[in-house]
Amino acid sequence: MSEWVEAPLAVHNGALRAVLWDMDGTLLESERLWDVGMRELSLHLGGPMSEETRIATIGGPMDLAVYRTFAGLGLEPTEDEQAAAAVWLTEYMRALFAQGLPWRPGAQAALRTVREAGLGSVLVTNTERALCEVALDTLGREHFDHSVCGDEVPAGKPDPAPYLRAAELLGLDPAQCLAVEDSPTGAAAADAAGCTVLVVPSLVDVPGSARRVFRSTLEGLSAEDLHELHGAGVR
Image 1 (cartoon, helix red, strand yellow):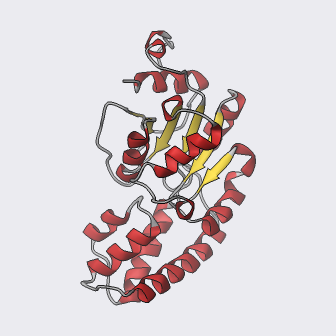
Image 2: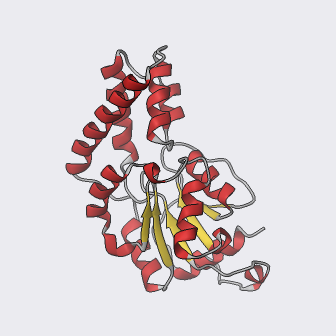
């Protein structure tokens, strides 16, 4: 990228202090595994999943994704049916995760770059803690100061709560953080929390906004790039 110019950062109430990472589709190619899991859940509940329903579940919290799967089949679940479906999906995904989680291009090096730059790092995911722990065996816990999971906040993405919690754990203002996301749902959450959002799209396109900056890949991401991207999203 072009030489980093410090001027835009002067407008900010604080320079970049941390990077907040989405997991599925951003660091790991697990969004494609979720595609398999969600379609299998739909079959388990009674029929194939439409493409419209699948797109509506991408990046969302598990409870909403499960509900939308029922709705896509024209079903209105009871609380017990909803809970049972969530358990079924968790166990199915646990088995898929255990078989191996491929990395997104450039993600491993990007995590190391953040650490070497002395920046804070938090994993922020709608995935529930039980599955996140399996994924952390691949990601490496040493790359993160904290992790925030979908079942540990009042509401999952697109609500800003996960990103607000991540910034709180670091003792930072969200504006001092660069969130890295791949989906409209995740980008909306980070945007609403007040973070600059680096969008690296995966399965679906993500609309732009004043706080969002775009990159086609994490490959070649440098510490200078991180500061430059953060500054570009300051408004």
